[in-house]
Amino acid sequence: HEWEIARYAMERLEALGGVDLLGPRDPDLRGGLVSFVDPSIHPLDLVTYLDHEGLALRAGHHCAQPLHRALGRSATVRASFGAYTNKDDIDALVDGLRGAREYFG
Image 1 (cartoon, one colour):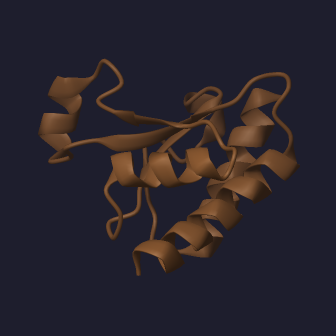
Image 2: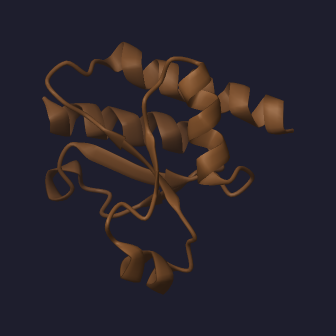
């Protein structure tokens, strides 16, 4: 289930455009999460905005600061999925990202 949700999330984020997905494109190689960056919004600002929209994501180094340094990233956004996550949650994430883009303009 988590891999299917990760696949759906990557498809929706790629279709939205303007999002840098990090990690393998094959959901079977990544597990139940998606890390990404919207270059126009700092990850900490983005998750703060999404929190106000009722979405729980993480921003930061995610215990991988050397990797972030190697990728030239100060932070990334991570969406983690579980048995309770459904496609409506992913749709809400994409809608929230659209809203954040409008807000931060």
